[in-house]
Image (tube, rainbow, N blue to C red; front, side, top):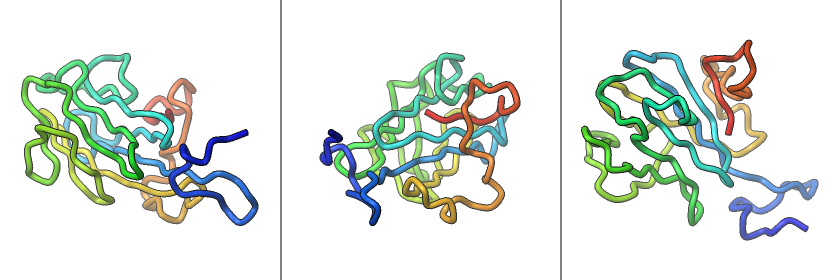
Length: 147
């Protein structure tokens, strides 16, 4: 039986658990166009390392630069002790910062745009990002990822 404490938005009318999703899309920088989506029972690790959920080719980013994590009903952006820091809407991240739809994250020379939506709410995804929800291991979607 599924634990409702791990389903922050409760249940749909047909009884299915609803979860929040976050999508980070590279808006500016060397890896422009890359994106990755995570659901609320996972995390999204971003950095230069190929082991990251969203590996970015930016020499000013740390191997494991920042993390998006769902906790207490919100998505949080956490800097992981990176050399050049992380900024959300021009504010330095020294402790976890609650993410909001449309926020900008700057790490190194890369700017990410945040999209937050409930699972199944495809209309909340911007039209130009309709290809975001793919398995990053699939050869035909090498620029997209799902956690």
